[in-house]
Image 1: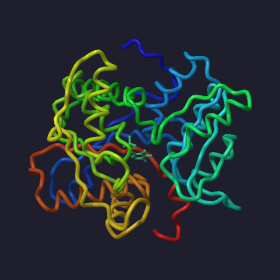
Image 2: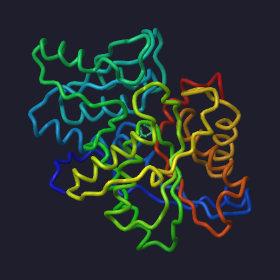
Image 3: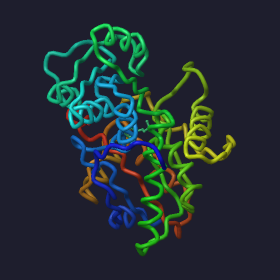
Image 4: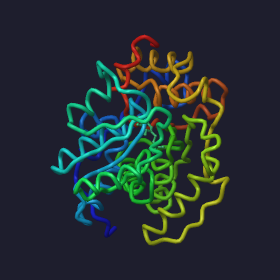
Amino acid sequence: MPHPRYPLGFFPTPVMPMKRLAAHFGGPALYIKRDDQTGLALGGNKTRKLEFLLGDALSRGRNMLITGGAAQSNHCRQTAAAAAVAGIGCTLLLGGDPVNEPDGNLLLDELLSATIYWDKENQRGEGLEELAEQVSQEGFKPYVIPYGGSNATGALGYVSMAGELAEQIRTGDYPVDHIVFASSSGGTHAGLVVGKELHDLKAQIHGICIDKHEGKGLPYREMVRVLASETAVKCGVDIQFKAHEIILYDEYLGEGYGVVGDTEREAIGLTARLEGIILDPVYTGRAMGALIDLIRGNHFSKKDHILFLHTGGAPALFAYGAEL
Ligand SMILES: *Cc1c(COP(=O)(O)O)cnc(C)c1O
């Protein structure tokens, strides 16, 4: 791929069996790919996207990354770190109100010296273009990264991850029939479905919806489908994905985005106790909770090999102590 890429992470991330968790349910076989260990400022899935986004920004001579999200956004924290690595600026637009004693990801945003603006209502990066305008008037050359880093450039990170995983499966001693992960702004999902085609990955891709997406433009499945088609074009292949090729589960939304319920609490507890692996309260706790429910409901065969993609997020735990 001719796309500029700036190295930020440690790759390949490890794949490990989760034998005690699998035994707890009496099968299927469970594996985990540790994209929480990508290495950039406590890691996470945004590191892969940012390698391509930062590469693009620098190739265009930009010197200020601008993005937005929730106050505990993992994406914003990794973007601030990427800017620090490259020696350029980072401006964040976060949902909510200024905080006196920052914790979790917000504490890290500050340590990474991002400039932070607050926008009460919006936590999905609405208003980034306006902020970019202001930042250019201050004399910077801004590069706007959309919510979650999820455009076709960011999704290239997960096209490439599919290649990395296909190679790990070829050289390892485990097949993978299904990949299960938290899907929220669509870049991870779109990248994986394109990468599956390009790198001949056999596994089915199962996204667990984390956020309701109601009244926010296209329905989520359609958003992922369109983004996957755009990402394919960027990779120089013309694949028009169909709606049924995007596998999504939207029955695990609980009380909404970022609200910890029994599903997340059980999943985080079991994974910690049986595997010594720390999930996060917003994304991977919910996605693992969904996987556990699907296993209990015999959605998968006991003979299947299932890989859980750990997308990171644990720094947010430290802002969720009261709810866990
Ligand atoms: C952003 C994020 C996701 C969702 O990935 P998308 O590409 O936005 O769908 C999942 N898990 C964690 C920990 C994240 O920070």
